[in-house]
Amino acid sequence: MAIDKSSFVPPYYQLAQILERQIRAGDYRPGEALPSEAELSEKYGLSRMTVRRSLSQLARAGLIRTERGKGTFVSRPELDRAVFIMEEFHKEAAARGLTSSVRLLEARLVPAPEKAAGKLQVPAGTKVLYIRRSLLAGGEPLAYDRKYLCYDRGRPILENELQYQALPEMVEKHAEALPISSKMVLQATVLNDEEARALRVAPGSPAFLLEQVLLAGDGRPVGWGWCLYRGDRYQLTSVSTAI
Amino acid sequence: MAIDKSSFVPPYYQLAQILERQIRAGDYRPGEALPSEAELSEKYGLSRMTVRRSLSQLARAGLIRTERGKGTFVSRPELDRAVFIMEEFHKEAAARGLTSSVRLLEARLVPAPEKAAGKLQVPAGTKVLYIRRSLLAGGEPLAYDRKYLCYDRGRPILENELQYQALPEMVEKHAEALPISSKMVLQATVLNDEEARALRVAPGSPAFLLEQVLLAGDGRPVGWGWCLYRGDRYQLTSVSTAI
DNA sequence: GGAGAATAGTTGTATAAACGACAAAGCTTC
DNA sequence: GAAGCTTTGTCGTTTATACAACTATTCTCC
Image (tube, rainbow over all chains, first blue to last red; front, side, top):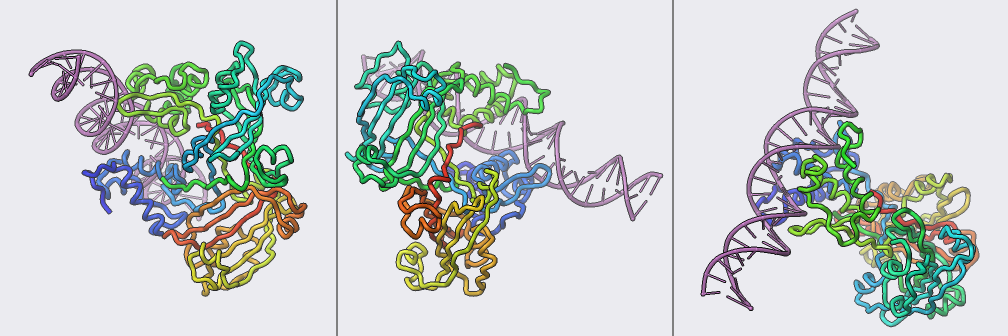
C-alpha cells in the first residue's frame, strides 16, 4: 500500500486506486471521514497538491465528498440512481460489431405543421425540410427517424448526402445556423401501424421514443423530431461509476 | 474579456466561462486549436496551473480535447449523444412536487427460481427474500418493483420496515453483505395483465423496464429484480453538458 | 456561567518552478 | 534525396509555498 514512483502509473492515480479499494473494502464506511489531506500527504510521501488531485478524482466519481473546513467524507452509495449514455447511432452499432447504414425514405420541403412551427419558433406554414430515415444495423432497421429542420434557402437538398450522413453533418450542411447542442427526452411507447411497418415489427410492439431538439449556439432551435428505437433490439446500460 | 481578481468567482472559473462563450459564439470552430496554455497564461495574467484547471473543466464537459505535444482543440458537438440520469424514486418525485410513498404488496421467503439463482450466484432453490412493491407518487402507482434479495438468516423480516424504506436502506438491513453498487439495464416494454393491474393502466400500455443487480463491495450480487415505470407518466430528460 | 475572541485544523485557490513525454519541424549527414 | 538527429513547442505531472475561507475548539474576560 505504497506509491511506486518508478511505475508508469502516475502517483495521483495510484493513490486514488488505493483509497478506492479501501473504501470498497469497508475500511472507511459511508459518512466516515478520510484522513486529512496533510495526513495523506505525509503518509504516502506526496505533495498536498498531488493528494488533492487523487481526491478530486474520487469526488468526481461520487465516492467521496469534501467539505471546506471540515474534511473529506465517504459518500453513501446511491443504489437507485443510474446514469445512461446514449451514443451516436453508428458508433454504438460499431461497438456491437454491426455494420450500420442509413436509408433515406423521404426528404422534402413542407410547410411547417403547427406543432413543428412552435418547436422551431417559426411562423406556421414556413417551409421546412422534413426527412424520414431508417437507421439500419446488421441489415435490419433498428431505428426510425423523423425530423423537421430549419432550411437554408441557399443550400440545395442533395438526397445522396442525406442518405449517408450522420445527423450532425447533415444539419450542418443544410441549416442556416450551426447546431451546437441538443435537448432530448426519452420515453417508452408502443408502435402504431406506420411505425411498426418501418421497423419491420408487429404493431403494438414496445419502443423507445427519443424526442430531439437541435439548438444553435445562440439557443435558437434549428431542428426537431423523434427517433424510435426497437424495444426488442435496443437497451440502455447504466454506466458504472468507475474512475 | 479579462479576469476580475476581486470577484467572488475564482479566476479559473472566469476563464472557463470566457472560453466557453467564445467557443459557443464560434470564435473557435470545431477542430480548431485554442491558444496554448502558455499563451492563455500570459494573455489573462494567470499561472499555467490555473489555466490548466480551466481547460480541464472544459475538457470534462466535452467542449475541448487536449493532445499531448500537439495542443488543445475544440471538440465537434455530438448531437446524437445524450446522457440520462435516473434519480432515486423519492427524490425524483419530490423534485416534481409530488408526495411519494411505498406500498408493500408481498414479502416472503421463497426458493430461488432458476433464473434468480443464476443472477444471484446461489444454488437453485436457496431461500431468498422476494418482495413486490408499488411505488406511488401523487397517490397513483407510478412504478411496480419486484426483487429477489439474498437474505441473512440472522435478521428477521419486518414488514413495516420494508413498507416505508428506500431500497438501499432496506437491503442494508436484511442482506448479509452491504450492497455498494448496482448495474442497471433499461428497456422499453409493454405491460402484461398482472403488471397493468398493478400500475392501474390498460394491458399493452408502454413502460420502462429497469433491470437491477445489486452488488456487494467484493462484486458478489446480493439482489436482482425489475422495476416497471409507467410510460405515460415517466420520461427521462437529457442532461445538458453545462459546466 | 456565558459571550466573545483567539487559535488550530481543514479544504480551496493561486503561483513559480522544474522535469518528463510526445509531436512536428528543421537540420545534418551520408 | 533520404535517413537520422536536434531543436522547439506542446501538454502531463509533481513539488513547495503562500494565503484565503471556513469550522470547531479552546481560551479569556466579564
